[in-house]
Amino acid sequence: MKHRYLPMTEQDKQEMLQVIGVESVDALFADIPESVRFQGDYAIKPAKSEAALMKELAQLAAKNKDTQSNVSFLGAGVYNHYKPVIVDHVISRSEFYTAYTPYQPEISQGELQAIFEFQTMIAELTGMDVANSSMYDGGTSLAEAAMLAAGHTKRKKIVISSTVHPEYRDVVKMYAYGQSVDVVEVPAKDGHTDLEALQELAVDAAAVIVQYPNFFGQVEDIQAAGDIIHDLKGLLVVSSNPLALGVLTPPGKLGADITVGDAQPFGIAEAFGGPHCGYFAVTNKLVRKVPGRLVGETVDQEGRRGYVLTLQAREQHIRRDKATSNICSNQALLALAASVAMTALGKQGIQEMAKQNIVKTRYAKNAFERAGFEVVYQGPHFNEIVVKTNGSVKEINKALIEKGIIGGFDLGRAYPELENHALIAVTEIRTKEEIDALVAEMGAIYA
Image (cartoon, rainbow, N blue to C red; front, side, top):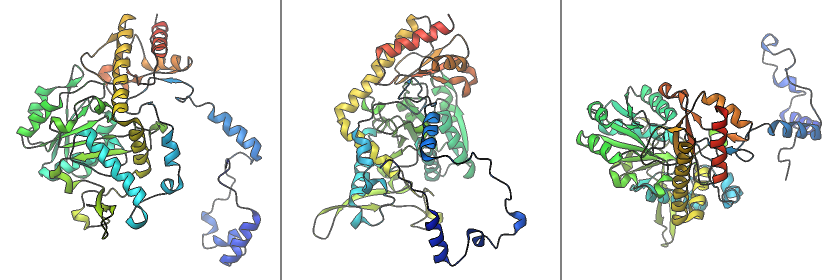
């Protein structure tokens, strides 16, 4: 059906007014004084016919520079990945599309099982003991992890690396402000967390937060960070790209107490930055402090397998002062999308997809260096590299878009010391020809 929303007719309006028992629409607002009512005309264009309106909207939409019609090297937390076609087919089914909170397990087994599978796959990817049934996005997941750590340790300081996504850091600071928790940033050294500075700053901290791989695409030594904070009786919180965990050692195997992130790389569109789906995984000792909800597997009185909501430490279910979080919903539809994508790819598919990101990013790094550009950080990296340019990244990106290329993230926006540096993302769907074209065009702009 092309037109899903049908307008109300004049007859519909009159029939509704008759049922309500009023003569006109104006009569509905009789209690509002004339002096405060809007008396003018709205500054909107006159109504058009359906055909003319559809044409105008199509023309407006065509002005968008999207990743379907342009080659994208923009990442910085939201990525242009391969999306199995089955994802949209499954999540568009009415039984999932309109599902909200599965409070009644007897009629929600499909939804509950889908969430349970999401939890299982996230726990396996991260190497953690248990995962919850999703959260809003990676940023809020990280903030909730920080607050969990503060509550668990009864400490009022969080130490976060400056190599963590800048927007994630802002969300953590906002949550911390409301809980009177101090947030201290650890400086970066050669694109990685400065472990010497961390050693000093981590004293009396509830948790140390690092990103794996970090915002610059560099692979952090999270085990070393964990050793530092664990010696000080705090927690290690890791924000991780789940796709990278197809090839990197899972944080749970390296000492992480909490692992969070955004499931966007798995079957979820960029969508102008959201909505996305956060994941949240912990060790067994923290399971009763996890925000949101968990789905558990059980059996009914006849011994048949079934699924139920469990461990809901939310203010809707227990006393407000005992709640772990005021998260009132989850991203069930997007968690389902991630589950379908992970299932379609399988273990080998996820590993191959992650390897392609590494191989193609390495090719891009070498291509930039051959062209005379400086790639500023060395060592193991995933998905992204930092390229020093000969001028304004903003101006370079303006020129690139005219060539049908969406350029990298302007790091000067978040890191003043990295002005004229671009964060270039290369995913598995980029081709050799596209990478070569990017390098050539960037070289030609300031030749």
